[in-house]
Amino acid sequence: MFNVMLAVTAAAASNPDLRKGLAEVGAGLAYGLAALGPGIGIGLIFSSAIAAIARQPEMSGPVRSLAFIGFALAEALALIGFVVFVLLKYTG
Image (cartoon, rainbow, N blue to C red; front, side, top):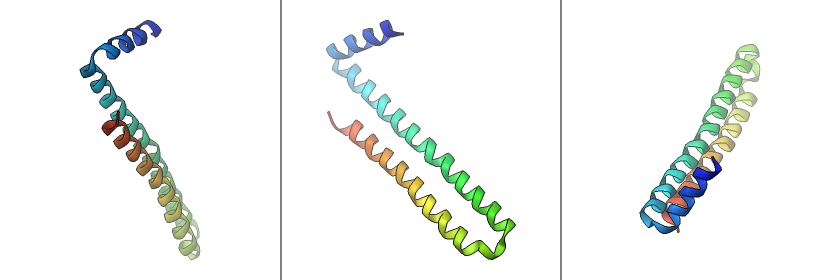
């Protein structure tokens, strides 16, 4: 595995097209992985909120507000991942 990585690094150093292609693949993987975690987290947040409201309907207000705060924080991680994707794709 290390030999393959070393060969790709050596080839990318001498070939700008390969370097650009590898940067684009890396940027796509970075954004894909950055969106995966928040997507799972948002699903867990709202499934737990629905379960909590089903158990105690009188607490729907506080549970809903906490769910939306958690949603905003999880979505912020996805937006940070998108910014990293754009920076990797369009710089250097």
